[in-house]
Length: 413
Ligand SMILES: Nc1ncnc2c1ncn2[C@@H]1O[C@H](COP(=O)(O)OP(=O)(O)O)[C@@H](O)[C@H]1O
Ligand SMILES: [Mg+2]
Image 1: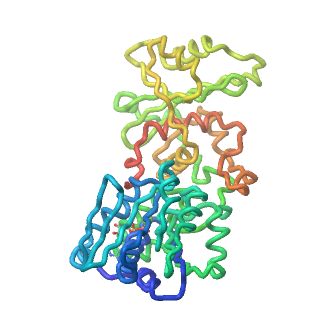
Image 2 (image 1 turned 135 degrees about the horizontal axis):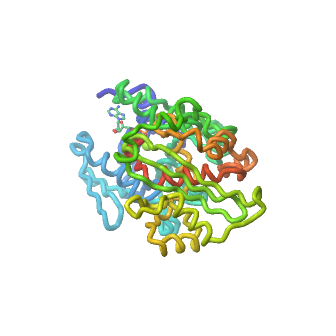
Image 3 (image 1 turned 90 degrees about the horizontal axis):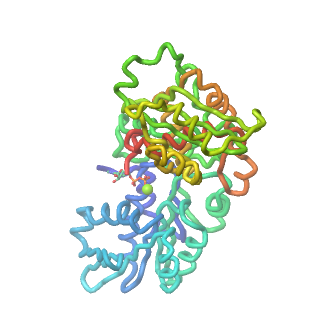
């Protein structure tokens, strides 16, 4: 397989006067693979008895994304003796009497920060740099002090307020960095079919970043892919087989002063159907309910026949309510409450039209169309939704991120 012209530029970079290389852009666009190959060739060609660093989000992700692919490259196997010492997280590469060490670090691993502080490096490759804590990245850069050192960065875009964008990409020239921007077309190994598949994996702001390769802020409507024809169905159109051929869950967003929401969900293995909604809005009703009352309502909502019991996917912080449900024989699962990941998954499911909401879930539908990114927070580097009327949105997010595995959305890795 040949290389694209951007990839050839990665191989030429070591022989230019640039001291840093930044490759950003779409997922699967051929950044990491060719960058790690070029890095090893440069290190072995220019140095002896030196230390280098491969950094990623975690040591595990460096092993997966860099080490395993590198050790599998036939050309490298023919040219060098490469040994990976898994215990010490180091690759030793030799040719003749030349030998260099390549240490693995995880930017988010507490121990890596301490370890990298004590080392002197001739080069560092930061894979997915936008996902690493800034302090770690700065430490890694500061450790590169050997003459002839070079810095190698790659990442998928994040917010345009992200420090790596504002301080490195926008100042690439002043930093003497070569900036190469990638799209999936820069990876000659991807067929049109595969590219089309990747495009279906992301929606909304995640599509702009991971597919279009743009550094954009999360702004405006979160679920702009929501369609009140494609994602909403009328009760009378609910398939007759739905309940007998699906797995049922009830998603719970707990609230005392805020709304309490239950969503009755059926997963037929392909589509997630939200069939009913329960909501108690204390403010509107001028009355708060106790956990006992809420649990009574929950039992009634689920149906009293134990044959029909299903797992409740509950806001993990709702300790007393979870206990109340457990006492009544309901199986409670703590919801995965990673907000961005949840939003990303709901967006994808929605865009793939594999999320169908009954038009009777009025509260949820109304909230979905008013669910917006907090643009103030975004400017300060924090991405989150505005905290108003989002209780149905939260319950939905809990359902999707806890029960729908990534592979169902087409995710790889
Ligand atoms: N020129 C190429 N020839 C063959 N396979 C390639 C080429 N460039 C990239 N690939 C393969 O495409 C996949 C995605 O590439 P990768 O470098 O991981 O992309 P990115 O880091 O941009 O997500 C990997 O499996 C990689 O081995
Ligand atoms: Mg990569």
